[in-house]
Length: 256
Ligand SMILES: NC(=O)c1ccc[n+]([C@@H]2O[C@H](COP(=O)([O-])OP(=O)(O)OC[C@H]3O[C@@H](n4cnc5c(N)ncnc54)[C@H](OP(=O)(O)O)[C@@H]3O)[C@@H](O)[C@H]2O)c1
Image 1 (cartoon, protein in one colour):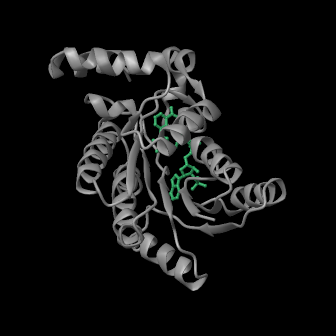
Image 2 (tube, rainbow, N blue to C red):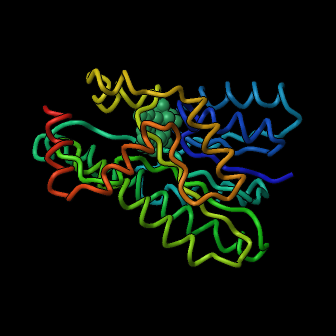
């Protein structure tokens, strides 16, 4: 059976994606910092499905974390067929006020770890002529986000990187898709500070529904998967507006 590695599998969208890949018969490798949460999920998945679940606790904000992770996979003779780059976080606040370390860690997790892990695992997929990568971005990618500038910029990177890579891989048998959720009921709202806004809570979709859209879209080899009609409408609308207008609007909506 194929093996799928999911980063950020300890909660939210990543946890729901892990359940779906396991239910589809894949062995799973669960990655995040909270080992207890990962072990609990691994036990559940092993008992519910006839699959192998391996836990590798890693702090992806640390330099060298992805290399350590890939070494841990090699030690266990694990070959990764599908990589789900889901781990990520955001922080609401003005760039100059938010901690430099937190924002640097955000770039490390949302961009550097996603990129390096893809680079380390992709050649094997290309050689085998199958498998793929599902990157979790955000509808935040489609415009600048004042008061959350770094987070929006990291997701713009994920969108652009995924699209570019998809073209490079055409004809190799390896698929690359982007899941771009809008507000979702996970730990993200409280952790980032976005949860305090009424619009966020009102628009938030269940994590299981977002993961299902991502899983189905990835299986169908779709390029960009935006779950929920409201989110699709918003991204379409943003495309018709000049960038100076969308960034001003976002700055007003998420005022700090
Ligand atoms: N929820 C939303 O509204 C929303 C909207 C658009 C996009 N997204 C994106 O969806 C993805 C999943 O987030 P979520 O909404 O499911 O939030 P979540 O419940 O907070 O999950 C985030 C996951 O990322 C992991 N993670 C964070 N920092 C990490 C680190 N340094 N090293 C390893 N793992 C780390 C967390 O695990 P540990 O804490 O155990 O390390 C957790 O499993 C993120 O990329 C996020 O940007 C979320």
